[in-house]
Length: 335
Image 1 (cartoon, one colour):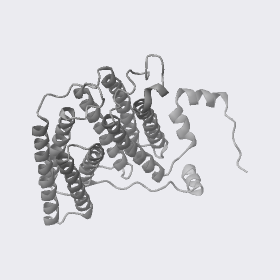
Image 2: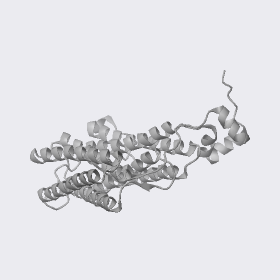
Image 3: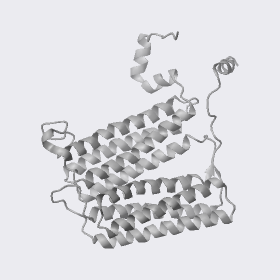
Image 4: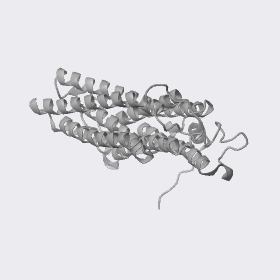
């Protein structure tokens, strides 16, 4: 039988004052648990982007016409608001699921032994990005889905994905100084790839802001540029990213680089090809909603793929999978 120790008044005060430290003193997650927590936060960051896109593509962006309440008189959506209200309010509720995933990642990172402050900071960075984006999402509603605020909302979500991807990678590494696996010229080529991918995503938000899917059935202002011209610029940037990726794979093969960077570059190339097919099909079929949603998911996967290539260019000693057993820990404590 497991004996449960009653909390003293001092324990209760400690839990209130610093709940993370209180949990960390009583729970030690395995490295696998920390990795899964970080991955869950990354997955939810992608999910919230896709569901946010679904809100826009179904014309539900103003399903809840105000913020932080759904209406002036109700915190939640009502039956009178129909499907649009349910979709918009449901997406707002998913923010709490995202917060839970990020919170789990923070708690797991803080409780890991030995404590890795860098992981905890990455978790808290995600939390503050989520809070900032929640406020920005409210502003998007209050200004009637202004396309520039919608673009900023997506870019901030991309920043969240970036931090989450970094944290996921760092959970599988140690804290020693990074050792480069490739030469400086290859690293520079990858940074060109990263810059091109950033431009690709940024121009993609302009395509969205100028395109026909405004996010609501009512009249919503669009970015006043030619949608087709911006889409063509977006396609050119996509081909630049594809070309740089192929060139990187060729260079990595030529310099006999480790398999890690090669595999991740190959994976990115395949994602880009799939994303390109979706992009051209949606362009020539007048942007059907389902393909636009799939393209948004592809955008997230492309960016994660680019980050994984960047992070594969160096290595750190891996952390030990699990802590020593109880007997070994007692011996270490006595020593």
